[in-house]
Image (cartoon, rainbow, N blue to C red; front, top):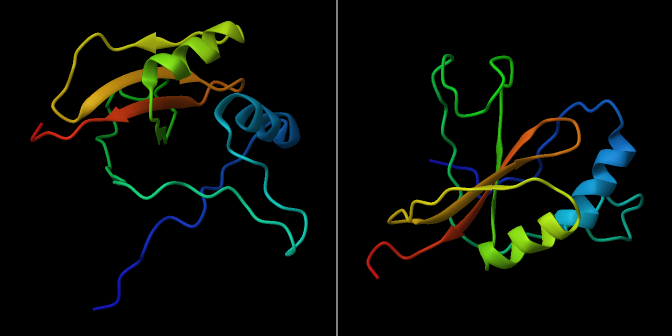
Length: 124
């Protein structure tokens, strides 16, 4: 059976696409979409990716009408949180240490939920 090999893009609507792309680039390091085929796009490190549908009544994403949430892997959650807070971005760190790692949550300027995840080896 053929299967997909990874996520090639994540596309969503925004009130101000250029400003939002700039925010993701400045604060999370996700470079903007190239304007030509001679430029390279953002490339993620190899690692686990979860595709997890949630029930319609889940409060995981905040607003009831919110249909998605991005989860980004990070190497050092504490350093990323400090960087975001220094830029005036509110971040909520989950105090629990889970078997698979550490988590924090924030929202982009348009209110879209973002989860940061510092993976941990559950066997460690």
